[in-house]
Image (cartoon, rainbow, N blue to C red; front, side, top):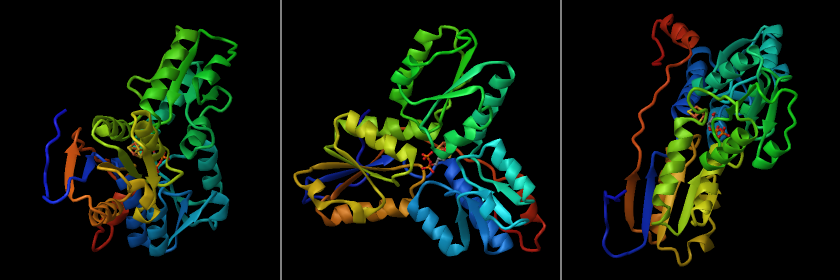
Length: 331
Ligand code: 0K2
Ligand code: SF4
């Protein structure tokens, strides 16, 4: 794909390729809006189970605004208002919240909910579900919880090789939404070799945002000798971007923000790619780009490899609560 400069400054041949799409996906925008609107409507404290999204800066900023982050619903006072994070929760968590009479606002991304519904359907139809994902990730814990006795987690091709199934003829697979496209393809291929009757989701579970950000990294890899990914270390989709960069021959690093860039990484570099995981705010990208410019990367080219225009509506309860106010909160 040809690269089109949007600005070019004379006086330096060191260049930044700013990838697009990058940063916030529709599910993250929605989840952060849910917390902000809940704070606006009800005032602090608003409890949030787990990090609303896996980004240190987002969590710190919302905590500053009055959100109280807890690990489990048991930490929320009975009857209080609480938000479920974008990564989704298992039915056990919903039941616990109900037992505590919590007023729940669910910020689970609709694309994660879709995987939960697939798990419920396959389990009801008597399939053994092979869930491809990362052990102990919040999303995987939630999806596994839909049919814990019928779901087996695999993380690698080796895990597939080790599977021993009571009925190898009725098997379905699902995936976490934020995996590596390439690694998942290999795992699914091995599953299909071992279980030729295996079925899967109608359309793939890896979400559009994860796919687009990985494709963008691949698209510029031949032009870059360094890739900086803005994102936090517990963000699965951000870490995958680093892996993709490294797999495509570009030295790649994950940073929370500019302060974590080691100046030594920039030595001898002419072309640096910059992108951000789906939970990383744009202002951190802008600060990183400005700092790189101060370090002599005077040319800037924003490369849009895939157009992205996805939005999700807010939870209906929040829209309703806002409409009841004399001055509705913009939702
Ligand atoms: O990539 P992760 O699933 O770890 O999550 P975040 O970094 O919070 O990105 C948003 C995705 C949330 C659900 O898919
Ligand atoms: Fe939803 Fe994908 Fe964003 Fe996760 S990364 S919140 S699945 S759009």
